Length: 320
Image (cartoon, rainbow, N blue to C red; front, side):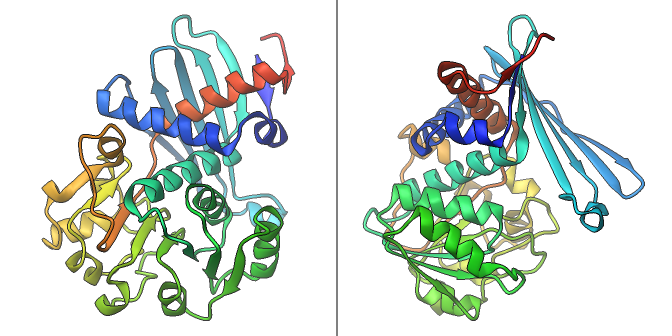
């Protein structure tokens, strides 16, 4: 069995590899050629263990995520994750892969594909609300699929926003970075706006005149109690593009507007349908792509990392 840490993952795949992997995953989702059992949620006191399996023919993946809120006081991350990859025909263990970077890469790639298929090809200005690990990778993938020259970042809760920008600047030296004083400034100065927060109230101002003609990529909210976007957005858009149909129930950014009749269910389509050519989106008007993720994406990115790492002889092989 192959053990792969963060450094192994970084060396194993490129941005192109990650984008291709997620494109394949989205097409597979459309075909229905997979099985995703319900996520197992185990709570013990204030701590939580999440178990997310996926069966996809050649491979089986099981993602394990532990959430221990008190870890911060001990100097540890509050969330640890790993992905266990097995052979789909025999069940033989193949790899144990560090989960947090793997998740950031597949989510970044999904966001990148959302930009590629729902925004104008000539877009050059990007806004980011939420300067965390997810936001970091969203900017990297956005700058790969579009010729981004300016990024405006807004996050009132991140103390190290200068370090966040310095790290991005070292990887994207051709891009000019700016810090916004408020969300409205971030949106006004950007054509494409990415939200990557876990807010329970909209982080995007409820001003239709500000939002009109903009292109929104929602990455952060993944629970019915979370919401990053205001009601006024839904008066401007013709449709919503999602990474998975489950988004309709999993995020407050869609569940609540559907319940309030702000958007009709038949106006929601999957990104996979844009990729396989079944549908198109008019990128001249206001657009909205919403991602919540799913275990199938973990399976495909784990498969790609494993195969590339084997080719490059990365990681540590152990007898299992």
